[in-house]
Length: 329
Length: 291
Ligand SMILES: Nc1ncnc2c1ncn2[C@@H]1O[C@H](COP(=O)(O)OP(=O)(O)OP(=O)(O)O)[C@@H](O)[C@H]1O
Ligand SMILES: [Mg+2]
Image (cartoon, rainbow over all chains, first blue to last red):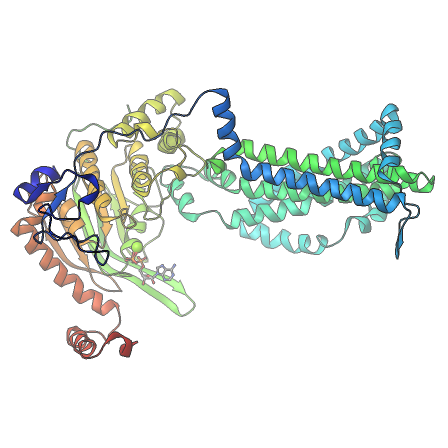
């Protein structure tokens, strides 16, 4: 259509890269005004039509081609992984040096077990069932406490975000209880619950509860009002709006809360296990100290770290699975 | 099929009478719109234009049912508007697609709310997406779409439930000029095909003329209807229409009407003479001195 409209004003021009220069060979205006054609004012210079070009260049499907592309696209991640591995190796090396030489650098490494000793005690621990029972026990407590926290805090946070009166009623209590650390809850929890087991789960629950609640509330405050309106004038009821708009809208924030909550849950669990447990990885670590089995202390600590890392990772994985729209890039 | 019959509709009559809406603020009631009357006949395309802040969105939100008038009434087909409903489709200036739903799921939303079955609504959504040239994108999430595509999906989503009227609040305001013109043609096509009433808010005079059967011009705040202009241009309309003498005359008339109100809206100090004085002063000195 444009082509028909410009009629006689159009001058077809063959060489692709000189569209800005006049056809009769007049000297080209140097870079001062490269885009302004020197031809009669108002003339349109059309370049010859280009052969169609594919929008996406189909990838080289062969295995080496695929591998090369994968390497190129994942370069930053690969570099980060390598750097991470290097840092951990250096840490272990430093640990080895200070412990094997029993250094005393004001901080005393006299009794600190060396990596080799810890590896040795890990071998022993892995060959008996007791160690895994401790781990299973801790995981069970985390799972129960965390699941209850999520099941209570997410709906409560959503309702509080939606109904200002409920928030005004519940929020002050939360704000007072929130800063109390898990350890401070231990005596009270032991008094409150019939069994030790229940009080430990309760403390785990408390640790996870507040981060999840606060993040859900935050998410609710940031829900785009125009989306709610859009849903309402498409015929959504209050309940449907909750399910179809508020819930997916807060999901990313909920998962932030779950990740933070999982971290705090582990902190709380270990504290509770050290003080009042009879099983669990926290108990194992504390008992190692009482029994002067120093390598087991480090083994317990490392196990706690790995377990915490793994559970956060699982949550992030779940989060990505349920919010497919937020990772389209 | 979810697409309403193309036969001339007898539904979709919007009547706004003696409309007033005041926002309660700490400084007292801010009267956004006062004593506005307008009518949109069944199947008609009507635009509202006016200076920024004159209450266009307020009026439209009241028709949608999001705001209650402090005086006067809003009726659709003789029934007072009590709240938002699927009878009145709305397209917002901000892109308002659900980011967690694909294009097709967005379009299906209204049908799902109505309880339509999965396969049935997929068919309906695909048909509408085809009309808007979006078939290839049905499984994309909104953040992969350009602004023009998002707004097309927004329009199609609002139309999917077969509303009696379609309300649009500056839907193309964020688009570039070329895209906007194409969007206007798509909207015109959909409107003619569906025979639905449209109330369209814009501040773009050309857009209002190109699209509308009638145009209401609003005054500065508190807004009321200053003028009602019938657009006598024949349909179908195309881009060449903008060169026709009628179009140019209409644009000049509307421009003068709105300019007067815009100056008022920008504060009492500005008027035509003051603006000319400003120009003379600027001409007499170079920019560095002015700044
Ligand atoms: N919630 C509110 N509280 C107080 N005043 C408001 C509120 N919303 C809008 N207003 C005022 O009411 C007037 C009309 O607002 P409205 O959004 O309807 O204008 P508009 O014509 O749509 O403007 P624009 O072209 O900028 O979108 C404005 O002056 C605005 O400041
Ligand atoms: Mg507005």
